Amino acid sequence: MPDMQARLKPEYSLRYPRLSAGVWYDVSPIFPGVTVRRVDIFGRRITRLKTARDYETVQATHFEFRVEATQQQDGQLATA
Image: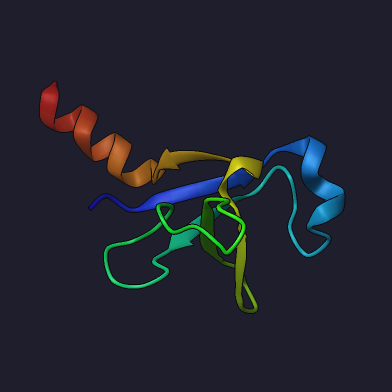
């Protein structure tokens, strides 16, 4: 499974005062192999982010996701 990163969408920045909207955070597995597929008791898809201090469990729809930048570059080099 590729390493993923997530960035807070600006319109949700007030909901997450400990996170910055322009920063890409590493997505940490909720449990082995599961990053964004788990749902909470309300049926919302959640994800877990690794911050500088701790972990933050958040709603996945409030974030943009990408494959970690170093893996994107490795993939481009392999196909070139």
